[in-house]
Length: 211
Length: 211
DNA sequence: GACCCACTGACGAACGTCCGTTAGTCTGTG
DNA sequence: CACAGACTAACGGACGTTCGTCAGTGGGTC
Image: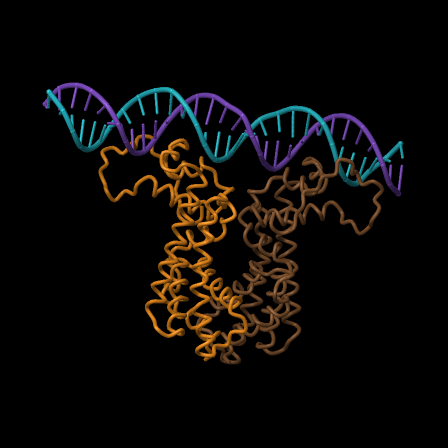
């Protein structure tokens, strides 16, 4: 497990006296462990037994916290998309000009993709494994997120004469470029998330607004 | 199956008299079907039974053509990386200046990612499912591919004063941006692969060289 | 032309293993 | 005492893979 999971082995560890309130609730630990395993091996490549082992409980106990394996993935994906959507809204609201909005948007997206790289990638890549009834609400949120980007670009093209051959194509190009930061970003890496966000902000502005 | 698979049902179809040489060999059909299923549902989400059903043979017969499920994925991933690497080499050789080389490189990458979108995405996303002994050779090829990009950017930064804050970061940004075309490209879509490649070529040049 | 034989690629049946999930029980905490 | 949350044990089913078998094809020999 490359990122940071450790198998928990606690033969005698039945919440001895709920000592530390800092200790995260089991449901959260399950969600975090599952996020990491889904990231590493995919949804279908990860078993409930494995999740349980890393959390340090027996497989059956998972069902005290989640109704099903699908529900774990759904909670990860939906929660992530929700965070991204509200964050992007705030980013846009924090600037007035299209140029300022684009920069804030890209910077937010990069920062989020970096600091929440596991969540963000799982929400993207494992969509196919979400149950059909649940998939709709996640996709809907994603569409609304993308349209935030698109609207800023469209306004820049209309009002400021940006170099945009094709708004949807460029929207997607910028968004995916920023998403991909999560693939290589590391908390202890050479560059901070803010520094990378700034580089990408420059890149996007230069690509679209000009030098 | 969204892309184009059809379940093959042929109760009486034992290569009646090897009539058409146009009919692809079974191994190729298996590879193509597997590519599509891995793309749609991931490696672990796809079963050998399912692959066999879409090809129109029984599961056991798959093993006349591939030693294992892992081998199918490996052949897809390695073959794809090989094609991309040799294509990128040719793209670089076709221009002399860093600017020309970057444009050709981006255009090739976009065009390949568009016209081979299933292969390309499977090779990227399903790497985690490749057996450890085989993973090395695929990763190695990918590293060499990335260094082709990196070298062009580095040369542009050194010799032509391009705006590159950080060569590895920008390398990755451009490459992933171009890869992502495969997510939405469709053969019968509004824009041809060449047109999209050109848009992305412009975008990359503008982002890095300036207007 | 008739025979032989290696080869290819399909088949049905079965293997041991692992899967997600459930039922029922026990135990410590409030 | 009630309850939340852990446990043990087990379920049916799906998994990748192996096996023995067999029809059809093609080339070499008489």
